[in-house]
Length: 269
Figure 1 (cartoon, one colour):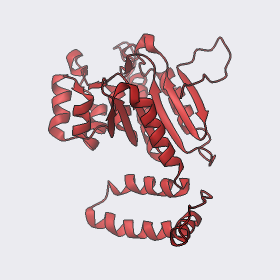
Figure 2 (figure 1 turned 90 degrees about the vertical axis):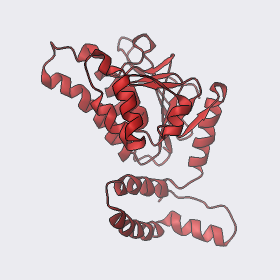
Figure 3 (figure 1 turned 45 degrees about the vertical axis):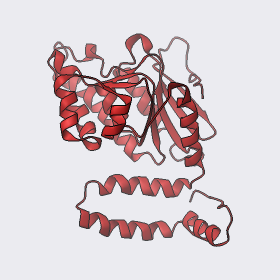
């Protein structure tokens, strides 16, 4: 699904290409000359594209992808030089955190489509998506300790999906891991041959679009909520959430269609 650029004044610099087709919005990082560095300009465009028109029930899925051999090199170090104030430096890290919070809050699944090298803050962004699909040639690296900065914010995302020992291995050595290793460690959902990446993304988005948006939104919200609960409390609230789920119009339609042996007709309510 090739991206098409957003409409804007020709003189205005854009960092991403945004397209939306048949309910699938793609946010394509498009600064290969900077290795798709997560500058404030880039992150503002990602955030704006990520959060707009969530209320539109035609929106069913969001994909974050990139152009060039480097998916993202992480934060733009020019924005983190010692000459910048503490407030300016903090704003850089807080902007990516805001993106990640909104990935979790999005009422539709957010996919990372990875085809290349992912570094530092790019690893943080990828690991925070709901579903991560990457090509076999992709790799992941957190090398910032090499130049005196421990990757503390990427570590937050990494330790939510990977073992502590493997996370610390990456963070302390700066050694890259392959796509297959990232899959084994739980960082990514699927790894496919390079030439099959587009087809795999289409297969996933088509499966998502066959489900009720309201059901997936409810389920996604609770999935992330229960991660912060004790096992006992998670099960207690999970039972309440499933009862709440059964009250949705689409839940009633789904149960009826199963009994009547027909395909459900979703209202997304």
